[in-house]
Image 1 (cartoon, rainbow, N blue to C red):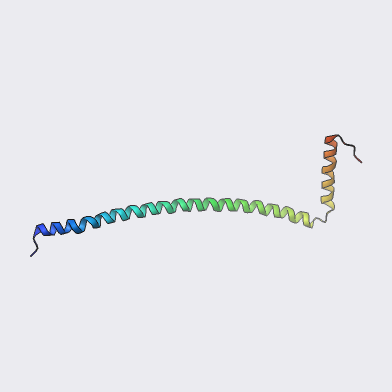
Image 2 (cartoon, rainbow, N blue to C red):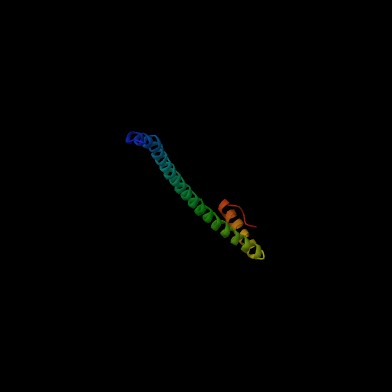
Length: 95
């Protein structure tokens, strides 16, 4: 028959390591959860940066589409006006 002393020894030998494993496991999973939260925050920040960059690129593409479909007359006039403006600022003669 098993006496109370043997039961206490069995609880200490078996129970103590089980409790220690549970504490260690709990800490591990809390640390893992915090790590995942940080990674999720970083991923959200990167997504926002990509969205911002995408908007910039879309705006540039719109400008390029406008230039490509312009027919050239309006663009050429704008370029020539800029050239004349630079000549006036530099003091060159306008031909």
